Amino acid sequence: MKSFFKLELAEARLMVAAALARSQAIGVCESICVCDEGGFPLALERMDGGRVTGPQIAWNKAFTAAGHKRSTHLFTTPPNGPALPGNEAFGIQWSFEGRFAAFVGGFPIVVDQQVVGGIGLSGGNGEQDTQAGLAGLAALRDALRESGHEVLVQADIKL
Image 1: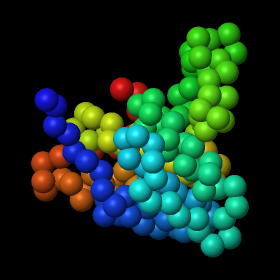
Image 2: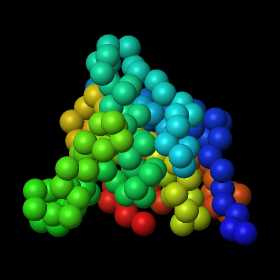
Image 3: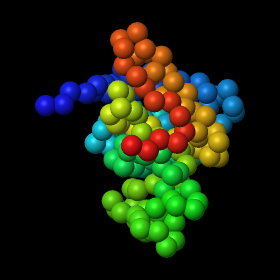
Image 4: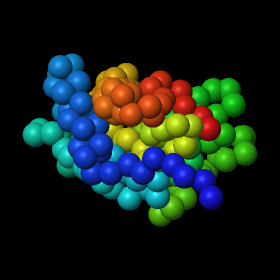
């Protein structure tokens, strides 16, 4: 049997708080979702002034990143992004009743080389969503450092 770190509400809230703080610092109204390894939300928040569509988009990104163990923008990064026209997964974005997000803003949460969830952001441009997402991942890394767990903090994640 393989054992792994289980993401819980306290860690999800910590990640959301860090992503919110970074979003405020860069002046963007984000929606942030942290989901478990199955893509189900643990924490979901929309900043005051955020778009009403933001929470669903953030959830979709977190779901996709967790379920497919890769940052969502990698699906459409030229030249070999699998969801690009002519590539093997073209059209995948219409899967899962439209919940599959193949654009920037979703990152798998990797602890000890295992995907334990996803974080998704919506509201800024790609760079802003990435900054806020990395802030969330960094907060988890910092919180788990003393317990000996390793958390991957980078934009391009593919396991």
